Length: 133
Image 1 (cartoon, rainbow, N blue to C red):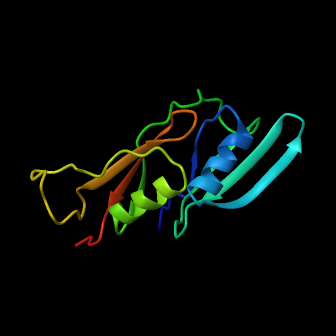
Image 2: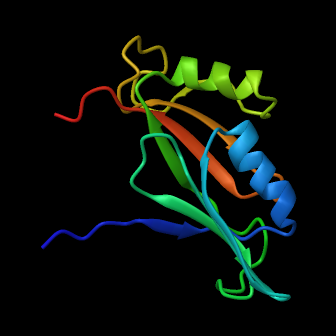
């Protein structure tokens, strides 16, 4: 039996601002933006190539403090290119860091990271993984 993680709820304070950030600045696809009533709205967004989506919303999602989710992680095959895309799209993102035994490593596989937050302060990491062996 496969167990797949397919949705992560990210708490935000302003749905339209968050939708614009995730879709326009991060490039996530808007899978749906569903209004069920005056107090219920669910927006699902998926990173390019991902099998896991992000859900933001009100009413039908768990009540969590905006900005309280930390450690969300995206994986790319080139962290420098990914960082450049984020900067080009206006995302405030930190420099590439090597989080491993050799801080001057040329091979960033599994150890190259950069970090950013969404407008509410939910924390994201971007990790380079080029070989999973």
